[in-house]
Length: 129
Length: 366
Image 1 (cartoon, each protein chain N blue to C red):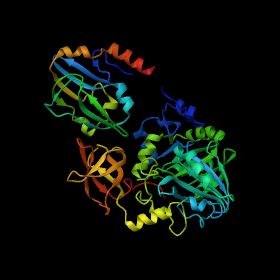
Image 2 (cartoon, helix red, strand yellow):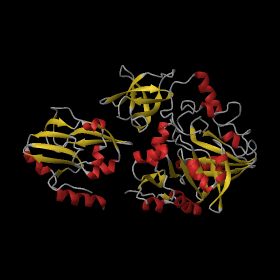
Image 3 (cartoon, rainbow over the protein chains, first blue to last red):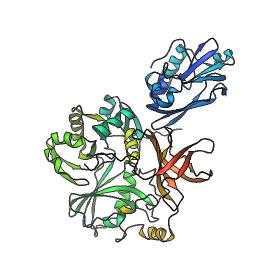
Image 4 (cartoon, one colour):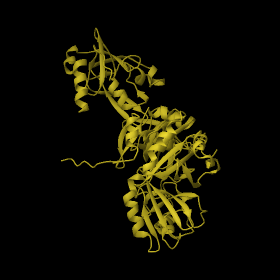
């Protein structure tokens, strides 16, 4: 499974990449692989206020729908509307072109509730056993 | 305490794992959900050719005359006038008129029948047959010695022809015995995908060689239960446990044309009563207005927000590039074109009731 070194992760397999106080978010390689072919993404609203670990997106694959939880609290400032037409971008490039939304982070201290790449790798290994 | 029930393996379980399949428990069997991915597998089936391992399904043999054996009373479809080497789809009902299972009857000889049933119901069905067949019938459950490989897709005939030249003669819903890789197999021109296709019944121990030989042809790819469900929903075919159940009347489920009211069968009196009272719900199919897909268990609402039904199966349809669903709607009219909503009280999406099936371009009867 691909993991990006400088991103932070949740137990529900979302990632966030923080630059200054803007976070870009998506789902991990493990999540996209478990879901299979993604066919629909219900994106959050522009300017929507979201709490950490609150459900803010819903992702559907051919046979199932899954809730996606927001890695940090804040205000949604941009959504990846390319996913409306091409949800498979998440399968193809989950850490790049398959990003879901950008958030203006309310409280950087919340990063203490997230995992580093190293921790997430150990976490995935623990799931395999 | 958790109780783990060991899953049955088909004779091809190791083949699936070697091909990288994602395996799942299905009806007590360890089965391939997908290999490459549902959308890629959908392409093979609809455009070239795909092969499914359906060895989990059940096969029974009944020896005896249609009427005297009791077989005719157990199944809803007319079987007395079936020509030898043809198959007919129908169901078997309980005394309350509910569906115990849907099934296909194969007439192998004047007094020899094969009945193909769903994997989840093998034991229940065998019990029902043993209890309801008369002393003039001989019953045999050959499920655990019979493998079943489904070759489906517009190129299925061209590919199977390489192994069995005479296959080109086989018409829709007929079957015959053929020599395949040095052994006898029963092959029918049937399937569950809406494409031209064949179901091969062969001895358990023969299936691995057959599977490997067919897959050597680079136009054939293995396909799993995930895409099988998508394909059957696109055709609006019922699946036991979803559109069919012991508590569901076959009339509600829209199986009318597979029920012969001119003969006697178990559950008939209840169905006649339902017919005279009039039905109050109807099997319906609807498209989503977007890529968002209905899911089993979603409610169906009318434009005023009243619950008018429930979704029994739903998926994203690669053919239509939108969500599609099957369900029961409380109604007397067919409602074609009616606008509906699906989802739950908090989150609904719009859709429209349409005429079945969703997928109309299949090679089924080519």
